[in-house]
Image (cartoon, rainbow, N blue to C red; front, side, top):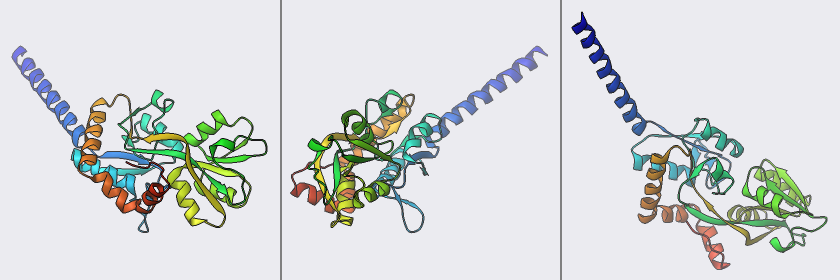
Length: 265
């Protein structure tokens, strides 16, 4: 009887060890769930077929190929990305997210993959000239909720009214209708919205603050962080970011270069 119990216990431990090993193996090949707010073309958007598309989507899929893992994109409002990451709903954030000290208190960031700055979309009749005269009595500056523009505005605009909106399109409309003097957002979006509304807006592209975008991860996922950083280095060295820039941002890059404004992956 003692021999039988010992044999059964040995088999159980063997099976348990095998299951644990299998689970660990699965973690290396399991679907990589990437969260992004699909309302920010050309980085994150939905194409005419209802599928995720854009620069961030291509980065996510290239990461999956690098890690030999399938990728699933989860569309999540920007303000819900970090909570979704921390609760395990997603594994990564690739959504034009700026690496900030405040966000770094709760999540980890990869090496930066794009540098950019905050700029101002002003109304055609606005007297704004850039960051230097934003904070004046009677000014109304629109920002998008949950962005670094909102953080910057709350820290630096003590006199001007800060109008917080949940959608980029709503902020642009406030400028076009003259209800806001300017919309503080990233340089590329400012340039793009000015191209769409050249008769109603002016793009003030000189940055009021320089920023870096990075991939967000849970602090405990140190192995995955190392893998992501190796991917970014490889993707850059093999021309992946250059190809994305030429494919999606050629006009923007040319305009920024002409204006003498740094813009690069």
